[in-house]
Image 1 (cartoon, rainbow over the protein chains, first blue to last red):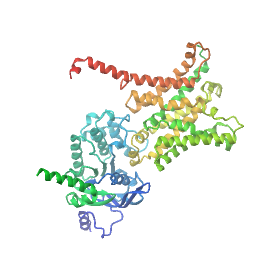
Image 2: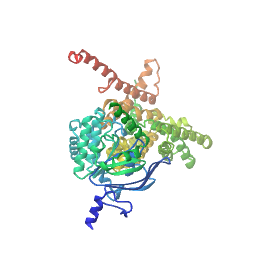
Image 3: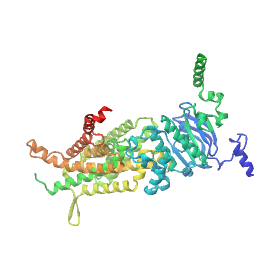
Image 4: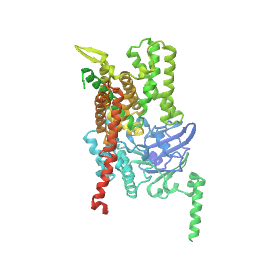
Length: 276
Length: 309
């Protein structure tokens, strides 16, 4: 029986004909029949997804494909019209301690009068619970987290005196502080400098080596296969999901991006011909 | 100048009101909802009217409850309209408070016309008269306004001390607050309730201009002078208290400069003093004051090492 379950784990995702366990507890993120609508307009439609443990997962798709919405729906930040998303077999409200969320950088006001250290320490608030204050211990851990993303020396800066890349690192350090099993990151690579990009990649790999699972919304198709070992192609529905090399095919991309990509490719081909 | 115990009480009441407003005001300003105080102070009118219609008295407890409930409803309706109708929050606030204010006017006209509850006297309490309405505690006669606003100040201070971490988190990143299990909606309405209660308590005794000014101006001044949360709250408190002191002093002194013998409106002067302190901070703040920056730049130019760079 054990070998059976291991086997089914290795052939991820299970084929749809196989009976799916209602609450697969070994799956970091299992999404079933998820539909989300804003003002009656569907943004996600019937999403079916199983994310295997310890993988670096890239979520790729055109603008408006529902990538951020997918993360937010998993975190109960947006109501689901139908379906469910389970984290290690549990609904989100019972699995808060297992999940860390890195929102888009623009989602907060960086003029807010707090230091980098304050923001990172927020990652410890759930553990502290209501009323209890941040103590020395949490601040020391927050400094460690900042050190892991390479900006320990900026701990006492007000957040608006940080560059975009440094702000992104503060958010990542805050997620590290949560010490989660599953990390949901919304465009951490958006508009960051090369050094930050490298720091993020190193961080993601070290998380994955420790068996953590990371779901990362990503924009840059050129780096997708370098950074991620699992891919989810999304355009309102899941177009494809699987190991990066197998999933990152021309056909799948065409299905995800539709006409827009073919246009790009034609341009690229034309360019190639003209050079030849 | 003829300073009496009445003047002392006016200043004390002024300080209590100003600080009680400035504390929740810091979080309003940080949430970019500064005008909520203005909206609430108008929208409480129907609450007052309904409380009067139901109880038939102008006793302060039902009035207070009615007004505070209307204030919280303002926040609820604003949230609904901006969420469901996809309307900008400032516009939603404008829709809600003007409508509620109008309803209040109509109710007062229809139901309570023959009673002394005109909008003017409701909205513009007068700080100069607060020492007349006293409560005896032992053999001390303390103005009712001092007790009411002092209690509100203590309540606000207690909530902010106990829930500082939670209020900070939900103001900075409400989504994170929700994912960590701190309901941002609860914290939002807690703050709105604080603002509503504070607003009602304060303007009933001292008038709305102080309330609206103190919710916004001292926190905004503090933000010019510091980039940290706790110093912001401390500086806002100090600015608010200072405005109350300067305000009352200048209400007595300034008219004499123009040869007038009677003092002018203390409420107006307190709000004006706050504006003046803001202007000073804006010009001379060591962080990013207009004049400070100018001076720093001209120093840099004179510094040969820097100018050659």
